[in-house]
Amino acid sequence: MVTKLSDDDRRAIDLLLNKTCTSSASANGFLPPEQTVVPQSLQSVERILSLLKQLPATEPSSDLVTRTLRRCQQAALSGEAAHPAAQTDQQPAV
Image (cartoon, rainbow, N blue to C red; front, side, top):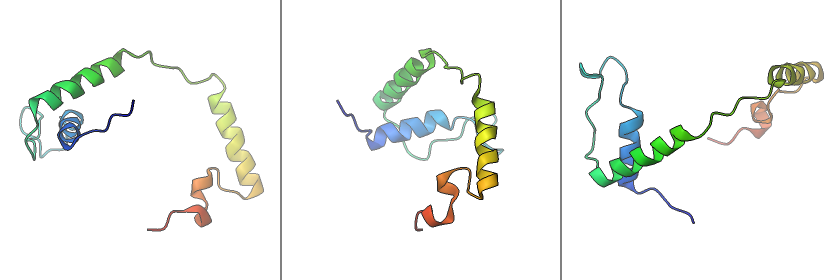
């Protein structure tokens, strides 16, 4: 089942994820919403985010740092970029 977010859902997500921000935030740490958020969308998003909080945090593999450094060293020795997207010929056109 594929569910798409509505514009109301997107605004609710923006509101929840951007609660605290820069110094332009009001004294209580919240920014006023730019657009109204439908209460049902806000409740739905809050339920989904609370479910995501309950997921177990997965720990990275114990050899992640070693493998990353090895890959960086190999790329430096071969003259390649460490990540394929960092190569100039594979950059998306803007």
